[in-house]
Image (cartoon, rainbow, N blue to C red; front, side, top):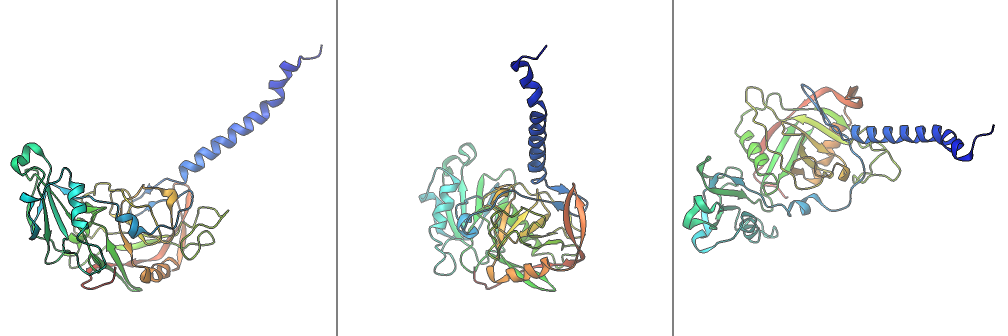
Length: 332
């Protein structure tokens, strides 16, 4: 007796359905694996998905306006808070930014202090003090701690907020973004007081390969790695106790971005635009464009292959030590 057509349909399509389900499962697994960060004793892994756009990192960082709670920064007042009030710390921050266009050198305002806790601030609620530091990389603190009701933030103008990562291949000048990542930048400023940075180094290096062009744009129909277009290292100095940094997210990852992996101290410098990584990492600065050739040089040093979480990576045969120092004058 022949089978009815309705009976034969499931039998005929079953292998194809199983194949499609298998392909879908593989795709899901691949997409998950391609965004995994793997933590090891010395290193972390990161991979991505789809390409980015042409907006500049500096421009996008300008959209951030964050500060540190329970902190009162000191300095010469340029706007008295008793006569200058807002409803939010962001408004106070933007008032300071309005006095820092970036076209005429140092900012007229580089520090903002806001009191936003109605109960703790009392009559000072809403006060926005705009101030000026003698040295923006060594801001004056009046008070800090849980009992402090103030929130404070820094603004770096043109030529300000530049630190250098010194290596044997040259110094990478980095513009810090305190308005995007105030806690991260505070850690970097603390590192400036450490005479040495023993243990600070780059240990992983992967160029752009045939996946991204020289401007960091993803090439059409190319894969997404490996290689993953980055140099990776750690900023944990031996002999110091590292405190995890809160996740602070603002700009996308672009060519030149300097970002933490997780809560640090592992970090990376991106050699390409990685919009596919979205806002998954705290971007606390950007390498000045003229120094990217140094990062590229490190990315092309001899490496050995390794496998992290089933992902192929390239580890430097000889780690590159680095030291962080303040740059007095620079062009941002």
